Image (tube, rainbow over all chains, first blue to last red; front, top):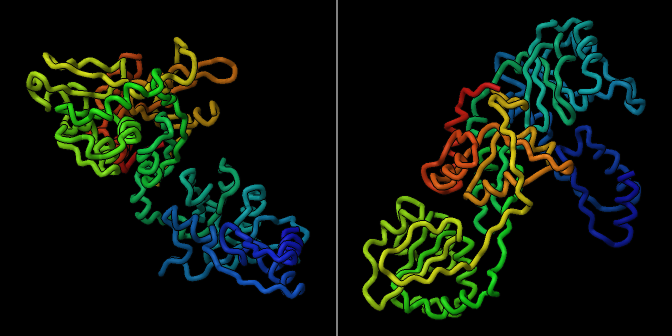
Length: 357
Length: 83
């Protein structure tokens, strides 16, 4: 029993946080725990939360009450056979009473719930919405009618809402344009993981499958240290990834080592990484490729000056004509598994439906 | 991982080496992983690499930032997308 555990832990002198999803006093057994703590003479505080019965529906654009549509709401547990619930839920009376009915933990018994609500007088065509994993990037929802609730193929945890408000789909989820979309990110976990953050802000569910391992240089970093120490002797120092910036700057004992060298960055993530180290890029080519960089840098440096770039071996295509260059291969990326010759691309639309609202 | 991947809608590639690396992955039974139906690339170099590997690239972001790729995805999937 959680309440027993709470009591024994606090009894040992610990400060205990009992963290629950939703609101502890709505089907959260918070009352039982508060009673147990009170009986044991242990001081406690209850911090109310937002119940999924309201929050999950809000994320589906459904208010549980709406002026002119519904002015009453009932929260019910769908554990109809729960012997600890005195008397159980009188679904027939709820069916007759009208207003919005929100059911938590109701998926297992949805067929019985629908049948009994209809038996009590609720119209078979009453709008119903089911929201699975509400508020999370995995959220999915289905709109249906009371008589077809049993056909809904969503799993727990789901919130069921029955009533005219289930026909509403208010527009604010548009603020999360990738809501309900699962996106695979193949980039290795590294500084500059802004793609994952941006995707999650847009509401996507992110599946990180790093396919590239960033490893240290083969020479143990000798060439990198050499180049960093002599950064000021180059006309240009060009960076092509945030990772390269971090590796280089780790070897830089003094930011003034750049001297008069100008600094170029391919891509905004790379220039942002430079900014993190207090270095403002002199040049960020409009076209974020090695070719774009070569175009932007312009003619070869004066005799006696050098340029230094950091690039991946397999992408080294844009050669700098007529200039001496030092190609610092400071990071290496390699596939994380042995090559396989074949693959299978699924067809759109996907097997897993993208929700609509 | 393979099971989760089967339910994914989009795969993003952010460099040619991520394309190569992804295609080299396989499940516990040694089969190549299924590729999600929508391939999104962060820039033209990556998109070229994906096409060269035989992938059908649905969209390429205009600039190589996470925000630009997310915006391109949102545009592509659109406000009236159907499941």
